[in-house]
Length: 67
Image 1 (cartoon, rainbow, N blue to C red):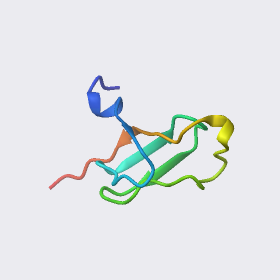
Image 2 (spheres, rainbow, N blue to C red; image 1 turned 45 degrees about the vertical axis):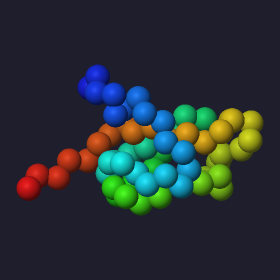
Image 3 (cartoon, one colour; image 1 turned 90 degrees about the horizontal axis):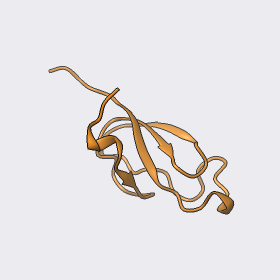
């Protein structure tokens, strides 16, 4: 568990993922694993319907690479 603010940030579809890890859509609950810098999925990601509201992604698990 963490109280770091990076887990509270919401990101829009098409934004570059600021961290490698697992993100959850705050509307439909769909989760994705993504590498840092890759664009977050857009409107047509799996199971997101307009009834869920706008797509916003939140970081759930941050992947850390050791040097």
